[in-house]
Image (tube, rainbow, N blue to C red; front, side, top):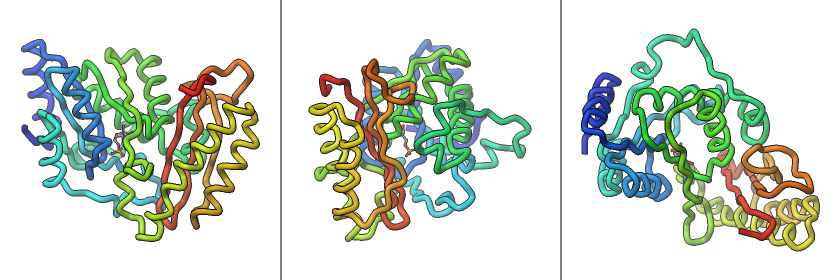
Length: 283
Ligand code: AMP
């Protein structure tokens, strides 16, 4: 496995792979890898000749008072883990390498980016589409891999791929969880022992709401149940807890076939997100 930090080296590698007619799976990450990232890499490896993983804490998707500076970073550890998951090339650029100018042109994500995480993190998804569009151009993937953990991000990237005709396929993998149900996240290292012990209540609350909704079709009651579970079992503050249709992220109607039940909770200073996606049959 190779680790490269410059765009020139990445392009050289991609050029060679294309010449050999190899398919390329791209796994974009911000590093500090856990089993969610590694499952993405293993899935990409099973479906492509070559796997490129980007490791880049992208400043343009962080707000001014967010955790860009303190976001956990450990490239030597990530390198070992990525290698074990079958990654062929890590692209780990510096901020200056990715953004050599102060950006005369901006991409702006559309309607799907103004709600849920976009409402409390203004500009976040503009930064996401900016970096993902660049990575798509540079790595020229046959397929790109994303986690359902960031369901809104997947929906927005799928829209970008459709609207801008990126010649690639998007593949999504289910959320990888700890044994007690907490969704794996690089940010889980921020949690104190007490916060970590309380955090699985978020997933439990989603399951309670889903079960109630499937039985009664009453979204308001289902949300109230989940809110109660979170407030009674954690010291967390709910940012949002909402049913939407998926993947268009619109208000639920009697015609909605696929539901997204999404939550964000501030547990201490750490913002945790989680979600369930299901049909009326519960699948
Ligand atoms: P991040 O490094 O947090 O930007 O995540 C990189 C990719 O890994 C994104 O596509 C995430 O959705 C995905 N991911 C992060 N956590 C998980 C998880 N627990 N299960 C599945 N995918 C995940």
